Image 1 (cartoon, one colour):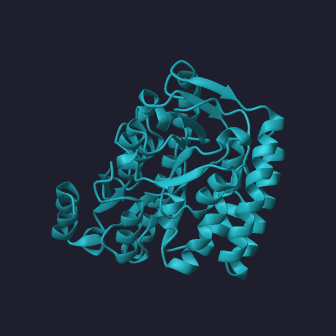
Image 2 (cartoon, rainbow, N blue to C red):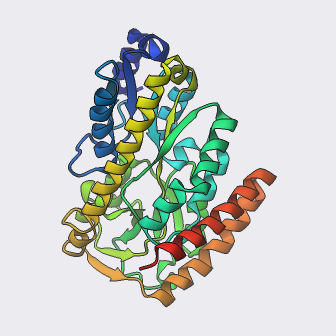
Length: 345
C-alpha cells in the first residue's frame, strides 16, 4: 500500500470510522486534485464543504480526501461499502464491482450533450438508477456529479475522421469498463489497460497511442504534451456516482440528513457550472484546439461511429446482465433518446 494511502487510511481508523464521527464530521473522497478552479469534482467538494457548514449551523464539517488519497475509485467504493469511509465520488467503473448494471450508462454515443445528460440523471431514469443502486448495494446515493463533460479521443499517430482511421491504434482502457473495451475493439483498435496514475508515462513511452477523456481532463493532466491529434467524438458522458455509507447516514439526525442531501445537490450544481465554463475556455475544447490538431466529427461520421459500436456493446451487455439489468439498459436508451430530443438546440 503506498505510504500516503496507508497514512490516510490509518487516519480514518484512528478517528474511529464513520459511526464515531457521524455527528460532527462527514468524509468525502474523490480521485482528482483539489483545485476547485479547474476541476468539477474539486469544485463540487469545495461547495459541499461550504454548504454543509452553512446548512448544519456548523454542527457538521466536511473532511475532504482528494487526489486518490484513499486509493482508486474501486478502493473508495469498497471503503464506503465497508463503513470505513462516509462518502465518495466514484466512477461507473469504480462502482461496477458492487453494482454491475452501472455498465449500461457507458453506452457510447447514447447522449449528445451535457444538457441531455443532466436531464437524464436528474429525471425519472436517474431516480430509478439511484433507487436500484441503493436496493442492490445498501448504499445511499446522493446524486450524479459531473466528471468534466463529454469525452473526446486523442492520439499521437494520425487524424481520426471516421471509424476506419482507428485500425490498429492502442487505446487506453481501465478495469471495470468492459463496454469501453468492446467499443475500442469494434472500431478495429486495441484496448490496453492502464491506470490513471500511469497514463501519462504510457502515452509518453508509446505503450498506448491514445486515450479518451473530457478536454478539461486532457489538459489538466497535460496529455497534450504527449498527444498530437484530438477528435471531438463527444461519445460518452460518464458521471461520478456520489455514494454514502448507509449506517453512517442513518446515525445523522433527520436535520443532518437533509443538510447532507441539500449540500450535495448544491455541490453537484457547482461542479456542472464549472464544467460548462471550462468547456469554452483555455481549459476545455477551446484550449484543446490551440494545443492539438483538432478534428471535428461530421454528423455522418458520428453516425458511422455509433453504428459500429452500439450494436457490439449492446450484445455484450445483454449477455452479461440479468433480466433487471437488461430492462435498465432499455430504459437508459429510451431516456437518453428523449433527453437528446428535448435538449437539442
